[in-house]
Image 1: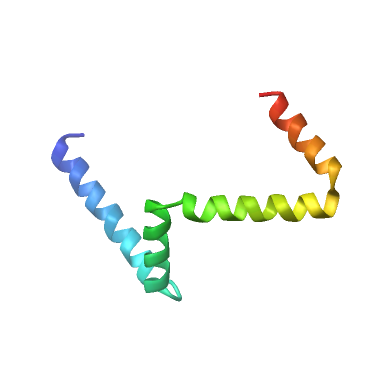
Image 2 (image 1 turned 135 degrees about the vertical axis):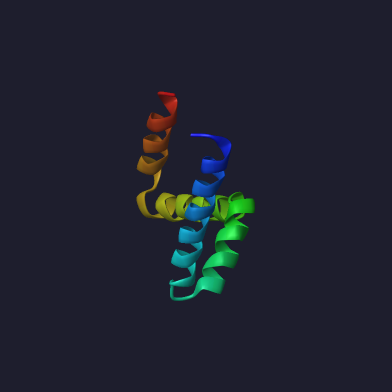
Length: 75
């Protein structure tokens, strides 16, 4: 495959993805959220991780701490 064929294939795939995105229920919302998360994924992942940790720690207690230590103690 030469460079020209490769670029044509990339353009075809980009067109397919654009058609798929336009066919979604809320394409503008999806596009803006996906672009934002693509640039700044940690802005969402870190708060969710902290919230889940606090929830599980309050629900399970010391056993949750021991479970996490077992997981990361083996790394």
